[in-house]
Picture 1: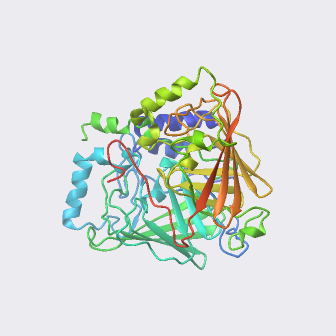
Picture 2: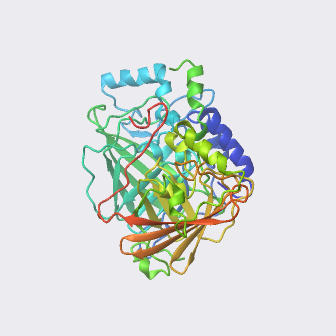
Picture 3: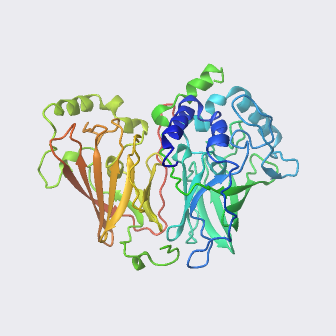
Amino acid sequence: MRRGREGKSMRLALACLLICAGVCCNIYGQSLFGIGKRGPDKPGPVRRMPDGKPDLEGYWISQAGGAPYGVEAHPSIPGSFGGPTIVIDPPDGKIPYQGWAKAKQQDLLLHHMYDEPEAHCLQSGVPHQMWTQFGFQILQPNGYVLMLWEFMHGNRVIPLDGRPHIAASTKLTQGDSVGHWDGDTLVIDTTNLKDNTWFDSTGNFHSDQEHVVERLMPVDSDTINYQATIEDRRVYYRKWTVAFPIWRNPDPHYEQMEFACREGNVDLEHYTDKGGK
Amino acid sequence: MAAFLGAPVASMAQADLQGIWQADGTASLDVEKYVDPPGEKIPYRADALAKREANFQNSKTADTVNKCFLPGVPRITLLPMPFQIFQSSNFVIFVYQYAHAYRTIPLDGGRHLDGVDFWNGDSRGHWEGSTLVVDVADFNDQTWLDASGSYHSDAMHVVERYTRTGPGTLRYEATIDDPKIFTRAWKISIPLKLNTDKNARLMEYECDAAGKGSR
């Protein structure tokens, strides 16, 4: 977070964490963690590394509206902001579930919120991690792009050395990501995903056959246009794509804090109290 | 700015520590065996030693590493699983296989934060020649130093030193000071081994009481 007012922010972040990590933090995310805020200066051109590739290092905040609660359009409910869909394809903004899978999503939403993976302090999976709250840091050490989130201390290590994916039998919560530059666009291909994550807090899910291709397209010094195309023939009848901008955090003194989760998690009791189990 | 994507790290006045490393030995079980100089005991205060034994007797439930809590420093380095070191222009970054933990070490000369504490402390780094020195403070008093119940208070101050000693080796030293628990500062020294498989990557180690993390 930030030096200077870290005491207040820390307490709020802690309160968020202890009360309801999965849902309520959207409120704090909107108002206190910089979503929708721009810096005072006009953005400059895309920053460059010495080799000419885009320099994306710094702190960023995804402008994904209500997506941490629900990927599709949804009204505001107590504890969470509503928002439009982040699905840009299909054009109706809906996840193109096969019939059985839509029924399963509804069952998860209505009867199995206790199983919400983030409530168990799991990382969020790919691409869900990209629209979690509180922002993230991008670093470009030699041969890699690193993405480090404050939320749940989620992280992604993306090698750029052209290596193949790991053996298909190995499944990981964050999957196996490999990246390359296509001009100024960072393209990330992710496979080997476990089926233990959702896309949001409304039961939108995938199988371990999920394959994700993400494109991070720098527009100027402070803006990245983000797209992810998701394919999973077991669950959807066609590919689908989400898109939103990612803005540079305007606070020059920003630092991310430690986000402990298992260490003080009472989110599960929150769900149990609501009869969600 | 000393950004160097695509340039060899050796061109910086820094050692190249990048790679996947793992502690060699059993320091995570009993850190006292790795006190430097060898053979010395951890200098517990007379009134502090009994708690180590009590911790050990209760370790099955009291050792928070069994619940995948953040393990503190230096224990996070000693665990029997790999971690990856990255070097960027203004940061050194450690990403750990254990519980998807990471530490970012700013190299900008900034000071520790005031009035907050963390499971893994607050880390600030600098280079002394080819040694990466990381100063860690702002700990809570919840973590242990090993599985044998060695512990510390919220007054602990750790200075880590990472020194490349060969193509596949690195020496990890940590000086631990905590006047509430120990009579003086003491040091451990542990070799780290590099994973030389060029396609190696960190896997995931998760655990939680509800069993969701490892399913």
